Amino acid sequence: MTIRREDAAIVEVAVAGPAEVGESPVWDDIAGELLWVDIPAGLIHRWRPGAATVSTLRVGQPVGAVALSRTGGLIAAVRDGFAAVDEETGTVELLRAVEADRPDNRMNDGKCDSAGRFWAGTMAEDERPGAGGLYRLDVDLSVSTVLSGVSVSNGLAWSPDDRTMYYVDSLERSVDRFDFDAERGRVANRRSLVAVEVAAGMPDGIAIDSAGHLWVALWDGWAIRRYAPNGGLDAIVPLPAAQITSCTFGGPDLRDLYVTSAASGLSAADLRLQPHAGAVFRVRVDVPGAPAARFAG
Image (cartoon, rainbow, N blue to C red; front, side, top):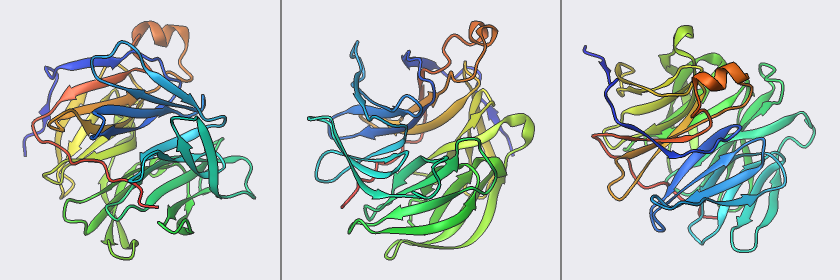
């Protein structure tokens, strides 16, 4: 198997940032705009490609993920649980609390499945192993625990045929797959698809293209990688920042891969070496993604 190291790939700085921890990019295919969050700053950003400015909404607490809603507005995984966000008024309404008995935990990455359920996980602020979980917000606003004993709940994606769910617990350094029941939103038969070697960084957010290949963001890895459905490494795209957090497909043809990054914790010397840390990057890819699923609640 030939692994493509795409050092010549055109990597643009789409939005300079810098974000403390940029995460959860999602493309609004109706508006033609990109959304993403800055987790510790509690910010949701929205940007139209080509625009000189970014609109920003302050959530009032850390926000781990954001997703679009079929009825307008946004659904978000905030520190305290699942929340509805009205961009016009700036109102943030907590719909369901999650782990209210664990004040040192917060919600992290999340995404909607094809049926419009919103999945998001948690982690301890000090990244204690096993302190978090993965939760599913159903369309009736009920919350179900999907996994417990999670360390740093992160990327989610579903195969094009909706029969497999992919999931990342970053401290496990593994991209796992489950058999997925799309009708009921159930998962079973967890197993590792990709074990990411320590030297490559930690797997973080993920996105899936129309060929069923996974793009994996690598924290402390200076890169994103593309893996085949059988787990084989297909391509590596180096990036000008170490802490790569997540990615999503956007643009009119869904072939612009937008990649978020973080500047948090970097020293002055680090920032001199990577002045674009915390930026949103854009990489042009050959295989498109699919429009982001929207919350149906």
